[in-house]
Amino acid sequence: MRYVSTRGQVPARDFDSVLLAGLAEDGGLFVPEAWPSLSTAEWRALRGLPYPALAARLLGLFGAGHLPLDRICAEAYAGFGHPATVPLVQLDTRVFALELFHGPTLAFKDMALQLLGRMFDHVLAARGERVTIVGATSGDTGSAAIEACRDRAAIDIVILHPRGRTSEVQRRQMTTVMAPNVANIAVEGDFDACQDLVKAMFNDAPFRQEMRLSAVNSINWARIAAQIPYYAAAALALGAPDREVAVSVPTGNFGNVLAAWAARRMGLPISRLIVGSNRNDILTRFLAANDMSMRAVEPSLSPSMDIQVSSNFERLLFEMLGRDAAATREAMQRFRAEGRMPVPDAAWREATSLFRGFALDDEGTLAEIGRLHREAGYLADPHTAVGTAAARALAPEDPAIPVIVAATAHPAKFPDAVERATGLRPPLPARMADLYERQERYGVLPNDLAAIEAAVRAHALRNAA
Image (cartoon, rainbow, N blue to C red; front, top):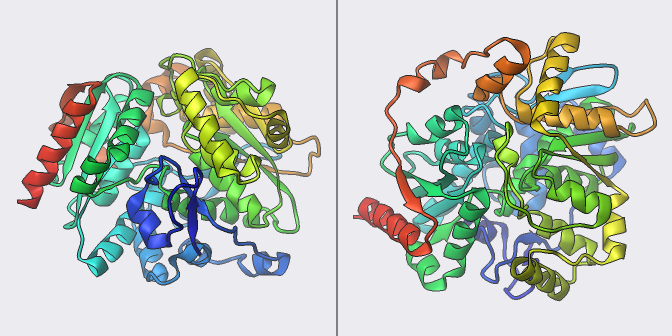
């Protein structure tokens, strides 16, 4: 398995190189040179596998088969708080919550990042190398990345988060980790500013080389690959490949729903992909009217979705444009320069044949959390509530098709919103009960590339000394 950049200006790479590189040097994102596919019989044969074994089998199709995947996957999921790893909870006659939040930081990002930390260890040890991971988070990626990389000998990690724009639980999960290889920076700006700073560091070739930069957020292809198995697990449990399913995903950076799209590309019968947004509704506007235009990011009750530049959309665009790297590069450059992406009508119509978009404001989110609790006895976080509301609104017309909702975070990560909606304040699990008493450590810096690079350099050099 080889990987190419969506912008077509770097040589093809193997899995290990893509894992360590994160972002391609031409600014593009890596995608498989050819998509693996399984037959109906091959999908049936995967039914009933324990989740770690299923994950290992599917990751092997993406060029990672030389890694000790059975051991890596078993170790990655051994500490999850549910024996099924990714349990399905039925909410009504056809909607199922796929709970992805039973990992160490109570969010779906653990599903991939617990794997990536171990993959990095294996590859870096074999190469005798050290890397500096930089990442931007709108809430959950940062804590999951830190938990996956803390105390690892060959990794330094620096996470940027938008100051004052995460929940307190999300912030404290990052800033109370005292491992010497971990640094947190609160940036004066929104998530898109943090994301732009990370991309700018990768595009600064001398700095990238000096620091041996790598990434673990969803610009890293390995993150997407590691998210495909849980959609496969849910679909197989509900009757695939002999039964169609639909998937509803609360979406910010487009990586989670792209993993569901990839599962479909590999042969799973996913008939519809529903994209849930909050008031930051660029994806919903695109799917409704081919309006991919930037607007200011507005804070909401679902901060992990407070994004107006969905990085992983570039991977879908590349596919919709017939894998035309030059056209993809031009579209992305115009988007950055003009704040609006020109998507050809044919490509847009191809996207809308599979994807549907849905937006829900804060009031509607609270109402949905309340409804779920009254009608199903289920406590949902604000992101998951967007996904369930989207599922109810845009489920396929055939009532026999079940809808899988990605339940992306534990309700205790957003206790204020859940309490407003239900009157109940969800407690943190026992292992995190003292989170509010733990000491925090982080810096505050302006949205300035030179200042951020100086902080990253000081952190990495101090640990390397």
